[in-house]
Image (cartoon, rainbow, N blue to C red; front, side):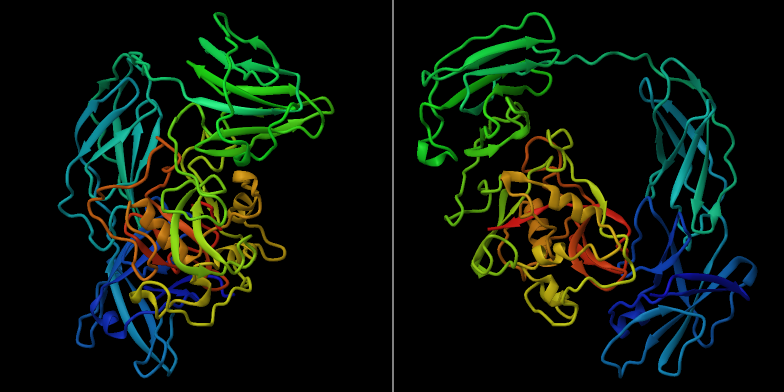
Length: 577
């Protein structure tokens, strides 16, 4: 693989890069050239979307030099050469190079490299006990060819913060101390460097900290059912801060319950209850050796750990959302333990319809893996490696908090696709496919298809390389189905994007929408249907040895050349059944 290389000679920027992307020759004449400069390693690339990655890249806008154009002033400008194929070719591409071959068309571009002006601070306001807002004047002589990538605010006490903003003139700095006097200065950084430092602002004093008033909702406590197999004694450890704990056991050979409390004022009541579902729906046989314990918790500040004296083969099962989950986390020769908060029983009493493996399901149902069904196929599809194999019909998405054993991390993690950028993985990058959105079919290959996510994910880690995204997803064991979850293929990811926008799924030819402003999106942490982030998501679909395809959820757009496999993007597992 050719590594990016930067050299400057006679005011000409030349970047030798093997990045090829499809485009229309006619569009190349009309659209302005936008490149993105990595803020860390300064590598420059062509942007296919006209946008750069916020917080990671600086944007540069270039102007085409026509044959009769006067040459720009070399002291305040740069020039770049773009080589593309001739219109008679079957394939179109753009490359940044110093010299073009006889088979290529050459286009020269230039842009201004004038550094941003010194910012002018017009107002400073202390907004809380630990933050302030610094307002700057709009720069009349700002350079449009090199927009500001970020501002840096520095306080008189040494705090510093980079503020990545698009056109905003009100900048916020936080992590200040209460009742403290501060003044500030600001610099602006672009693709070509950093502006002079602004004059120091006037001084302001932060506010006094006032503890927020917490009002606890007066709703009924959610209930978590735990099955105690082959047990005569169970103990519950109550975390600090709990004020009331009620443990209920059925009349079916009640187990003996004991407590150890970390705070005073704990009370417990043993009550009778019934099995929440019929015996045929449980993963075990209800008999004299099976105990069903119903635990209702109010005012609990953390999770409850249930431990029971049992045989080494005993299990803990958790019933929530109409589904039984194996929550066994540890065992010794005489005891088995599990956390009842693993599937958030104390944060949501919502009951989601459940579908059994092979049964009829609808979008929004709870899947057999504990996720949410987001795609129902009209006909069966193949997902080689999945339990459904050639007779798959549904895709379910892992719940929010999938990447944390106790559901404390509610939003999706950002992970590296692979640190391999020199070898392809073995995915089918050649065979054309026409399953997805019409506008993207010229670029769609077999590894985009619904059902290819499992295989794509399985080969992401090539010999000698690592894949943090693959490792995290394969380690996820939702619904006791470790190894069955995968990173969605491009067309699967497009369906997931539509689900995140509350849009109808099921037709792969329909692209995820672009909304401005965004009306409804499943972000936040209220329940496990949510947790999506308005950012870039990895697909498991490879483009070449260096790049993989991704989808930008805020715009619904899909691309590959903007981000190499070594970047960290958001990841959410899905599963076929």
